[in-house]
Image (cartoon, rainbow, N blue to C red; front, side, top):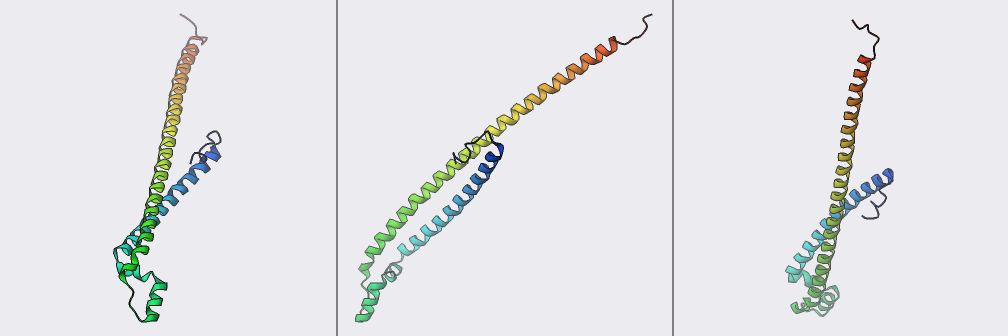
Length: 152
């Protein structure tokens, strides 16, 4: 984000950087939704022991070949693995939220910077208007007094 908005002197580069920041923010939001959906899916699998047992494909195939049922205590390894994935996704989600906050703060900073610049331009416009009116008044007075009118 900092590198996208670093070139403040070049207007075209700054505008392109702002467009890339917006695209980055949108892609971070999409990625956040995907991570949330994936975390929900893993949580649903963790809530169901049968689903965790169904993930043990090799052990299930061996048990079926022997004509036995799969022992329900074998899901511990799958549970640990899924909990680890869930934890990693939580960390990724917190990183994405942190990046989103960083992008938002940069956008807020840019908005404030643009507001300050716009206020300076408005102030300069007011000063130029006051100067133009005062010069116009002085020109009118000088023009009226400088006419060749006979004095009675």
